[in-house]
Amino acid sequence: MSGRIEARFAELRASGRAGLVTFLVAGDPDMATFAELLAGLPAAGADIIEIGMPFSDPMADGPTIQAANLRALEGGTKLRHILPVVRRFRERDERTPIVLMGYYNPIWNYGRLEFLEDAKAAGVDGLIIVDLPPEEDGELCLPARERDLAFIRLATPTTDDARLPRVLRNGSGFLYYVSITGITGAAAPVATQVGEAVNRIRAHTDLPIAVGFGIREPQQAAAIARHADAAVVGSALVELVARHLDAEGRATPELVPAVHDKVRALAAAIAGVHRS
Image 1 (cartoon, rainbow, N blue to C red):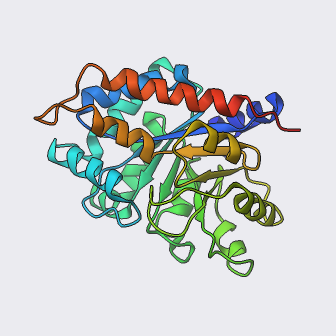
Image 2: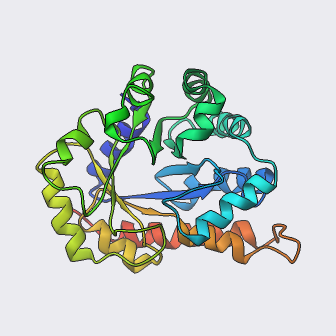
């Protein structure tokens, strides 16, 4: 199941370090710039790449990522435009896992089974669909797994021991632990609390655990890397995109280097944490 994801976490375990998962919204601020950002992420230190599928009502996301979704949609980005970019990335990079993250409505409009077939053919490795709970596994989770696409579950601080087994039942690839209650980018996680939560979750699953929401700076990523199998950084990178637009909302020449430099700093901090 999901060979690239399993292989990457096996490599990370063998090297005694946690991984860095980066998140950017497809088509933000335009598809050409996004493709350039995507192409440079592995060399900058991203171990797994999450790509946000733009949606008009991203309810779990804070203002930074909501604005990125709107920029992408206003630029004409549709789900059908994302998969060719993934395919071109995969022609150059056969090893870095790619996960599509978003909401079910665009997939439903695309045609769920057609989407799964096309995503697999393009080189996608997994999906995180925020608004499909375990009770709806027959809708997309099980068909995805039948096509060897990981279906990555979300757990939160309010996911108790009674709920966890249901959340984990058909999950694969890794578990995404949302370290704070609320929307993306709203607050910073407390590493000791994350460590306690990760230890509790490990009692229920052998899946790697990636921790996200609120991780913005290298020292925060390093603190999370002491407990989790990977740290997820999204809002901080998306915010850099927004800060490097001109008055008309177009990418400036500094945008791509700024994002890749941030990824390098985050990756270096995580690499400095050696795990037993």
